[in-house]
Length: 248
Image (cartoon, rainbow, N blue to C red; front, top):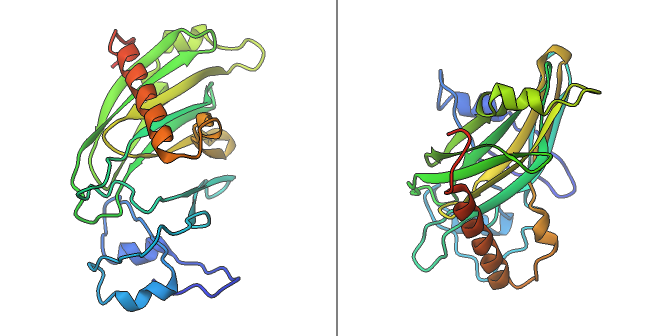
């Protein structure tokens, strides 16, 4: 795509570039940034780049924006880790646990949970499952389910279709007319990037959130301990949701 000079920004029209390769259908475009010092190692796009030490990915971030042509826009910044869903020999499998309280519905407002499944390995071909649950503010299970997501694809969960209409009505706040729920999702098969998109089409308004598990701030820096904590949390949610669900 091109180079970005130091201390500068550069705009790339990804839709225009990708449209020349894939036309007529929706598609997922993943853009990776790499340090210019690694470019001499690459002779074609299929080459693997060997890095002598673990790189600092603190600023290797991307912005995703959703907007209405005649309205507002919302964006979020997230980052891709070096071995995301690499599925390479000797590498531990990626996994996911996320939760958010940004699930809010009303007569004008809806929430969609957008699940992106991609990999830094172009040969990645795993279909992974994602379990989820929604609870009311009082802690009651409102809905739960499980979806399978193909590699290099996007799955959208429409909360207005997943949560039963009677549950939405029973949890409506009489003051502002909104129904709020807590969402949790997990997968022990792959790492998904989760976006929560709240939209109000009639108002031309949209907001975008990236679920960042609060337990990250409570975990020790040691990655092995972090993984163990995530694994135990996934098992706990799997056991809880296996007992039954309100909606599949």
